[in-house]
Image (tube, rainbow, N blue to C red):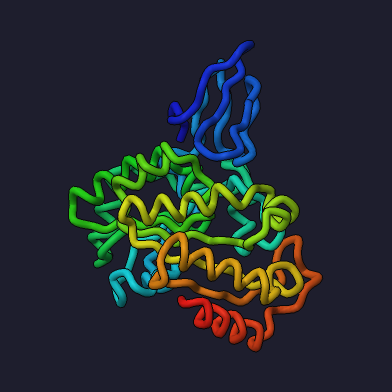
Length: 281
């Protein structure tokens, strides 16, 4: 469903600049941003996916993963299509690397989200599967309703969002898991099509605004698994966030455009755990 987007500016010659995420796409009339779901129509920016869900399921909250937030509860989980990063190893590329015209999407009314969560015995709602930042307008409206009905709301995010929209949606969130893909700007540029700093800033904002924060770090052989990089990441979490921040080191499996690497050895994950403990996590 189409709707006027939030967070954009008019430019010359009917161009618009999207200010939702750090890419700051300048979009010509009839074109879309990097995310594939925000389009310039007649000099105005529209979201093409308001209420358009690719995936709807009831999950354990631990699957997000959020291990220290309402443990044992079930969460009504939703995703759409598109993404504002382009990770070569994406596990959900079938929905993240496509646009709204490429797959079947279920159209949902904004009031439906909380009602379905309650019907299925869930304690909250989760914006997940692909990047929720690009579903901002629908996530915002549905999360407002969920809060009024006593449900929690969580984001599972790559953290690639600007401060103003994050603060806006953060008013209606209770927890967030941020996927820090590496502790290297080079990795972000080459593998994910982004930058590291905005992701770290989002983690800091989550702490500042009082959200429950957990961080995921997918350990990829030969790319972000060096002892030095993991040590720097852990030290940053301790010094800039807090030593009691839950960190999930997860195992890489070959996917999408990265099938040339083996799964992460279990010993590598054990080493990451040891480094984290040594650094004070």
